[in-house]
Structure formats: structure tokens, C-alpha cells
Image (cartoon, rainbow, N blue to C red; front, side, top):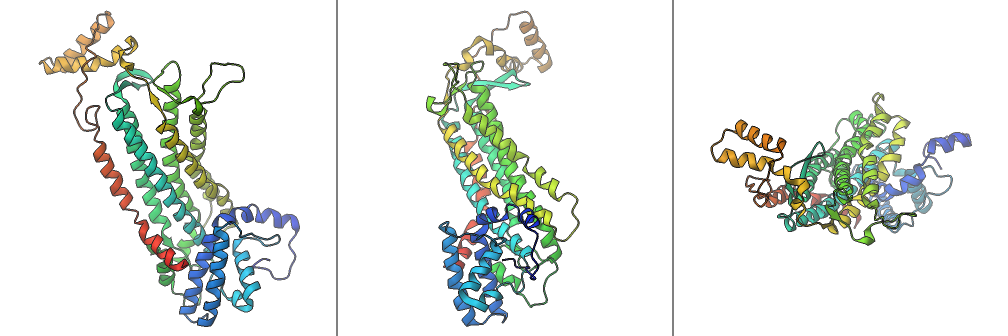
Length: 444
């Protein structure tokens, strides 16, 4: 079944090529297509294109399909092109002519726009929940190890004293900024495109504000041409948020790989979190962090993949946009998996104590010695030269027992409570409750 069928048989090879992976990928958006159809049907009844009696039989049938989709029992049958066709086919099979009426005022173009926005909105809520959980693991680790020093590096050269509190806390605060970007993506996603049809509106007196309210959107994509132009742009915007989170995880994974190597030896993982070698019996490899790094680097490239598909398209709908689903839809579960495994691995990191007692790190205290002289009244540049000369002559013997950093965000004043407050403000800005309440009311 094809919604555009005019009685002409399509060449089989052309059909397979143009459908692509849609039937497989559309199962991920089936629940959202059904919810969108519920809202659309209620709007059609409101403007007189469906009767109350027709709506009364449509909604239970749609709710039954929704439950099947939730339970994984909804299938797109052989010969049916996509989820939109399957839903209409099921309704027509059960209800006859009533099922044929639900497409009035819609196109598959605005259907898939709506489905992808509802899908992305749902997945963003899951991502935010996982990011918050990882944030808390990092904050807890930061507090627990705030007094445990390790060397800080610039240019991969020993630079200044750092701490595990700073290291874990840095990635916690990075996630706050990642969620700020995610919140911007959320605001782009949470606008209703339904009613834009094929991109030029409709002669029916559609009540787009009503479907916006029913589906819990914050606002409309008002201009129908822009609503269609939003396909690809929405996905790329969300991909930028995914990329930002993934980049934070990849960088953390890279640090962990370095710090676990024998040349650094700063952290360990429990043996059950490592893998071995087929010929070297001593090996305990950080494969979990290496694969995390690779997966997240792939996700970090997602905006460029989408931009490459949409980069030279004019306004209006083009079938090119279908290909975006192939990289966009799977990205969410991949990121969710990476967030889960990061929280698990970081939560089980064991740190090595007294690292800075090693003679190899004594030059990390050079700035401490310069500052000590400055506090005694020596001009900074003279103090710098004096310590530099001691280092060159092999006479540098710092006092490694005193590291006194007190300003905001430093070793002695991590400001984790302030970072926690920042995260709470960002989380409150999503206002997920409005969306959840609207969908719950619609479905029930």
C-alpha cells in the first residue's frame, strides 16, 4: 500500500531503492506517528471534517495501535511503504471509510516532520536524564577526591599541581554547558510543524493552535514553507547538542586512557572492567574507554553528516531528506549507551594516592615557588627568573607540602555547590512536565 498510489506499478528495483531503510527506521517513530494522528483527528472533528461518532471509533483504534507499538507488536507489513501508510491501512481495515479520512489536511511531509520532532523531543528527555546522572557521579567523585593531587599538563608537559577534584569536576561543569546547548535544541524541536502539509499549507480551515496544545508544543512553526525548511535544520541542531555531549565524553575517555597507562599510572579500573591480550598475559586494557572515545568521536561528526546531505537544497521538500533518518535516529540510543557506560566506568575508577610525591613532578611546583617569592615582596618577573635559574642549575627544591589555592574554582575552592546550582537552573529551563502532562492526557 502506498498513500500516493494511482494504480501504476512501480519498478521493483526503484521501489526498493526509494524506500531504503524507511520501514526499519519508522518502527522507532511509530508511537509518535500514532499520537500525531490522534491529535490531528481531534482537530479534524473540531473543524467539522470528522463527526463526533467517527472520532469516537477512531480514537480507541488509534490507542490500540499505540499500545501495540509500545509493546513492540506493531509491524510494517510487506508491501507497505512506511509507518504513515501502515497506520492508515490498519485504520481503514478496521473502520472502513473512517480510516480513509485521517489524512485530510496532511501530507506525509508534515507527518514525518511531526514524528521526528516528537521522537527527538522524547529522546532529548532521556538524554537529559542520563546526563544528570553522569553529572552526579562526577560531582561525587570530585568531592571525594578534592584533596588528592595529580599533575596538570599543558602541551603534555608537566605544568602545575591539579587535583582529582578538579579533574572530575571539570567534566561535570562541561556537561552543564552541553545541556545549555541541548536546551537550545529542545526549543527548536518543541515547535509544531503539523498543518504545513506538503510545505504550502492547506485550503481546509485547520486549527494548528489546537494540535499545538494537544501535543504539548511550546509554539508553532508558523510559516508553512519554513516548517518544511526545518527538516534537516532541526536534526542538525539536535545533532550539535549530541555532538557537544559526545565531545565531552570522548575527551574524558582520552584522559582516562592516558591516566591508566603505566607511564602515567594515575587511575585504575577494577579487573572486571578491563580486557586482556591474546599473547601478553600482563595486559589490562581500557577498551571500555577506547571504544567510548571512538563512538563519541563518530557522534561528534553527526552535524557534518547531516549538513552534507542538506547543504545545497533549495526550499521545499526533497527525498534527500529521507536519508537523514539513517544517521539521526540511531544516534540517540548510541549516545544514551555511551552516557550509561561512562557513568558506570567513572563510578568505578580507583585513584592512585600520593602521585605528586614522585620526583618526576617536582617542577609542577615552580609556579608555587614563584608566587611564594612574590608574596614576600619580590617583583613577579624577578621571582620568575630566580626560580628559572634554580631549575637550570639543578638547585630547585620546592616545598611540595603546601599548595594553597583559594580562588573560585581552584584546587582549594572547587565551587561544586555553585556548579550544582548552575545545573539545576539549566534542568529547570526544559520544563518537561508540560510536555509529559499533555501527552499523558492525549493518550489516556
